[in-house]
Image 1 (cartoon, rainbow over the protein chains, first blue to last red):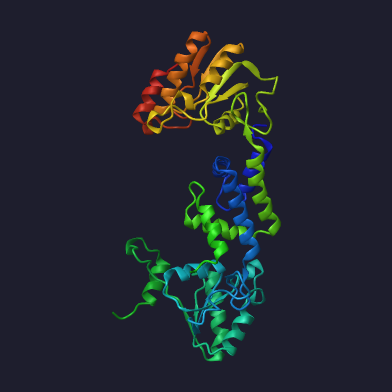
Image 2 (cartoon, rainbow over the protein chains, first blue to last red; image 1 turned 180 degrees about the vertical axis):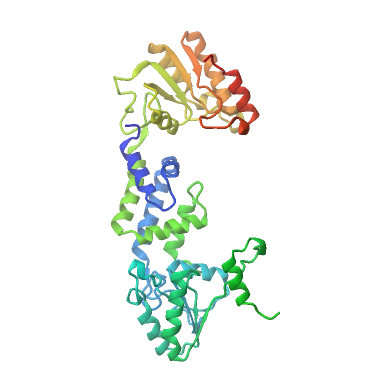
Length: 198
Length: 198
């Protein structure tokens, strides 16, 4: 037995993180052993505190430290615009662009019949109710550009069309800074489909 | 401000780990948020416990959960053989080979005058005392194959030669499974130097 028990235990729990293997876990463990006791406690506390404090906004389902998130409780945001995303982390990515000033709606997944995820598993009822209740002018669907995301977008369009609000989907095409030569066929055909006058 | 405070704090502390950037830290944070509260506490506890329980063996300086490590307190090990390494983690790597059955001596660094690390900063006095006191037949120097490791090895040889114990250094050469075509010049010349009769 080469490892002391508590080191082995630490490496084992660090291995559970996604993308962290045995070697990286060992490197992280030795980094922790090199930290002061206060720093290790600060890291441990940040984990437990984040877990304890963060919940999902009762209105939109994004991460929040109170009943409603900072977006839903911000009166400066455009209340007539809803952006539908799959996961809470997608909200953070969209926020980073600094472009979007409307509200969000997090589905917490995408339609995937093979994985047993049907419309009931997603926050679709709440979405329909929000669009009905509030004066929502446009719903922007920002689900992932894959089979599940496409199916979910189509389903949402079907649900919301009768409510007479505009339903759009974010554009697909070449990533900025990309190279046409290396674009895959599907991206390139989506890019052609979505062409705009200049 | 896109991130809730406690999430921001968690991502910030995870960013301190070596080799973990903003994006990976965010991925790890979301993994933690997806865990049960018990699992998060288990991870946090493993960190603090490892930090609290692990110290360095008073004899050899490797990681230990008691005053002396499991190697020094194992009577089945060859007491006449000492392997000198730079860091406690090097002991674990050597143990993994399953080849070595002697004792260790951890220097906790290597000579590096530019970084202000001279012989006094390393556990060299203890090494000399161990070799003097015990009946050590051979000291295997397993410092890293770089400038600091080479200088440290030379210094140790100079220190121990008068004590009439054999001082050796682990071999340098082509890594097993490697390809001569891709070997760098220095490794290849060391490999030639260290050639053995077959």
